[in-house]
Image 1 (cartoon, rainbow, N blue to C red):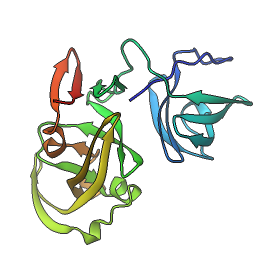
Image 2: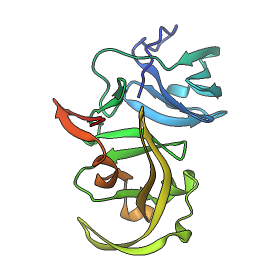
Image 3: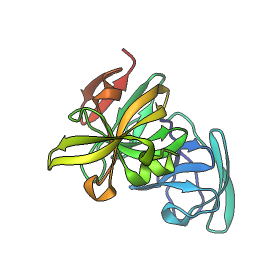
Image 4: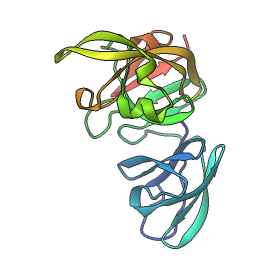
Length: 208
């Protein structure tokens, strides 16, 4: 993922407001430790409103002023839970819950997932699958054994999973009810195509 460091007049410090990525009409924004995917016409962290987007940029309104934010490379450590893209490498930091979470593109839609090398498959909350245009009812019923015992889900196919410059097409996933899966998880059937190692407190995902 790429980051923006922006000089912003008013109460927000320059390092607090960032545009991480743009997926269609949705922008991934953060203010301080608060991070969200915000659609055009909606308000996000700190009351920042997204007016419109284009590839790599978003027009936003804050405190009565309008400004264009651009996704640009950023040097140095990221915020907890954020990822930094550098060429064909993604570094994923722990978020406030202590998990390596980041925003990925599922069929071009921004979805927050937890990178979890301990699970075999990509696991999707029903809500996230629906946002990505995946019809779980068209999937195949499967029995899934997790840390809380056996559960039933629907095996589906994601046309594209993208993290920064890293992407795979035709990725298998299991859709589970939201109450069975607090957060969607990126499992080994995606991660095994890349080299995954630790870099301090972060996970580093890169081309082999």
